[in-house]
Image 1 (cartoon, rainbow, N blue to C red):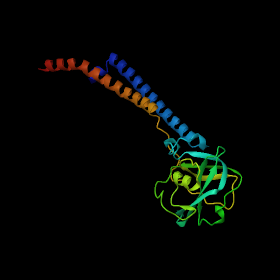
Image 2 (image 1 turned 60 degrees about the vertical axis):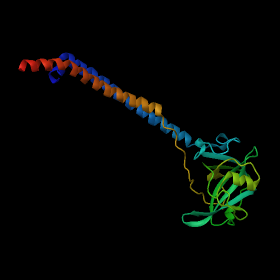
Image 3 (image 1 turned 180 degrees about the vertical axis):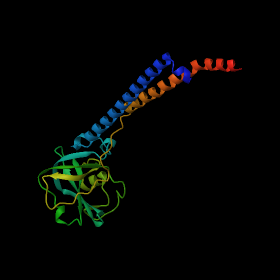
Image 4 (image 1 turned 180 degrees about the horizontal axis):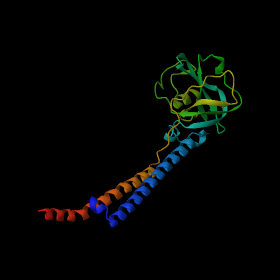
Length: 246
């Protein structure tokens, strides 16, 4: 095979094979880089806050999968009658409560906003801000534990939109928003709590990945095809050499 491989015809063949393999590897790398570019662009788009009305609708009984962990904005007015304290919540090892207030949208629906942590529900920071506000936060799914647990008036054991709708006698959108910023800001106010579910990742662009993988398979196939043809053509010569030795 080595003797045959250095003949002019097979030197041309190996040159063609190397050009093909190099091109396939480069095309595969290009597709892989394109995959990463698409992934970064989709992640950047998913990290930009969008109006909550575009993510959750009246018909949704629970948060859509694509909405969980999504940054959103909520524009409306806090309703002073729609507020509860979520008991037994810590922040940096300090016991306290979470303050959850209802923001009424222009269409009358209510969004539960977890405004943050306070040492107690009677802290001055629990006062409901007045006027129109724009809340930026992360959309969180309902907490499933202790949703129906009995609690003292004005408190709940967990945040569940169904339970809040029952207490407030209002239509509450599923899930809740963990507040990160508020405009206009108020002082004093609850300390923001890191959301349990961070920004949801985006689907991996499998199509471009498979294109890259396909080109690399082509490169391996080109090498295998060259070696196979070389072996087939060299086999009769090897047999003749063996017969001559005998």
